[in-house]
Image (cartoon, rainbow, N blue to C red; front, side):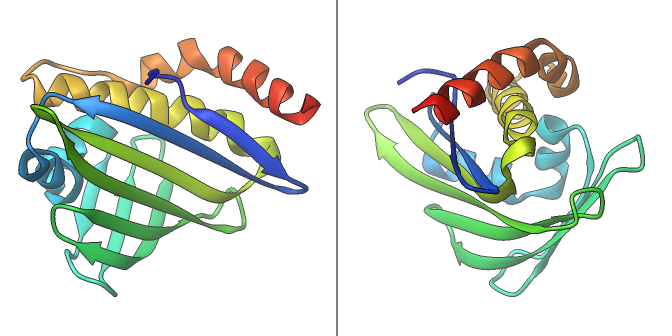
Length: 166
């Protein structure tokens, strides 16, 4: 398992996928994915979430960027999926978090699909930074996912180029 995600594309649509092991129980990880206060710490955003299928999700960052979506799957401790709508992108994508207990911790599989292929590197770098921040928050440490995004974006642009070459 590597911290880096993978990028794939199929014509105009792209996807990013991560598989990360966390030294946390499935319950702790689930709470970090669904409790607005805990989500805000690793997402670096103001968070509103209605924890149920059909519930609303809203993320708002300082730069006035905003994402809103609807929860399409909600199975506590196992699966969270919601639509992802950002006005700047003009498309609706889908983000999915799956949890599975492994050893003394929990594996998180994150898949963000139906993103514009040219935006996949940005989503890859963004989620990588957020997942690093999630690990820090679970360990009781401070985190800045935005700084990590700036560091990682060139590497994800290169990954996307490798995916296109295949």
